Length: 129
Image (cartoon, rainbow, N blue to C red; front, side, top):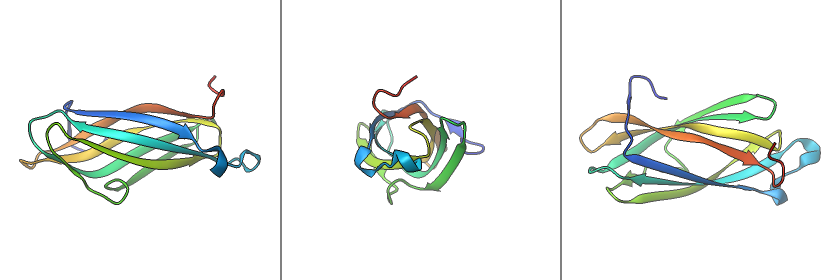
């Protein structure tokens, strides 16, 4: 989470993941995943996504934190009822891991808040244990 920020529940975040076999190289401990995210504004005011914070954990319990401005080079303004969709990726050294985090957002009236991203699984097909 971002420091000193409230968490609001009017932002709905859903995630779909995919293992990218053609870009992965298991012999060299390289596993590539794509994730597609939908961010829906269920509130009554427009919100702008300012930055992201990811916590990525592989199957060896190695944790990597990633912080950055916006997502995929954008800081989208999401109107009430609107869904912002984007796809990005992650590379792990194991065929199994998780991601979770939060987006720092600001409402039209200037209130900054954190929108939590629930934990989701990154795994090769048939590898969940």
